[in-house]
Length: 292
Image 1 (cartoon, rainbow, N blue to C red):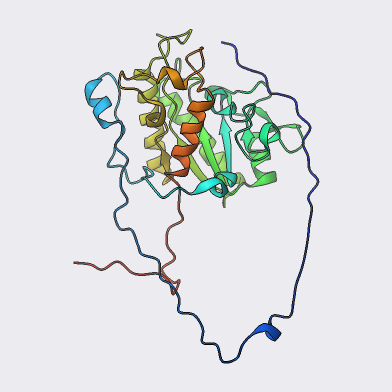
Image 2 (cartoon, rainbow, N blue to C red):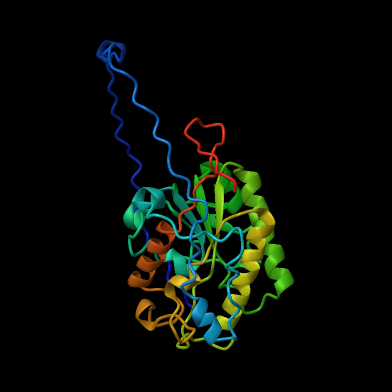
């Protein structure tokens, strides 16, 4: 199968630094009372997004997502562009197209897309695989790149390259090995595991890969997320049509890659199913849930 090559671009590294300061003590009004601390309301039961539930029921060949899983990211308020700016995507070609479409910070020169020099990579062959470091365009292994840059949040968007020939044991072993390598290289990075997107019957290799196999693989990814206590993004649902396949208007003609509108839907889903750090119970603003 053919994948688009990375678009060459010059990476702009100049940063404009400005600084300012003033004497804080001189601006304090001694008679002003301190403002009360606003304690945020605690949402005890986030709403699970079940938008695809009826489609799974209508198409039993698909493996449904486990909506009771504790790692499934629920619907959230829109976290906005600032949240997206914190994310690095370790991805194969369907997500890679965020870069040539210029949909992330930095446009076509974004540093938020990590993949191979051809714009893709295969889960089965990632041990020792060298990706193109987007900061200096030098090829390095994934752990080396991770250790150098230590992103705040990394979304792993992999699996479609490999699902046609990897069995359950191989898929879980290689994916788990990758998770452990990333955690060792950058322990403070929050990893999020993302579902593979649905595909269309127009895909050239339809039959070798179908949405039955994609959803089966997504169930394996969800199990890995549960094993490692990592959040899981059900982005499969963002592009799924009533017929159990990707909605054609959201896909390129090849049936594999989401088009710009499709990737817009994916980013909207990520923003509205945002990972949030667990509350700090020692924070004075924390409101402990009342037990009944």
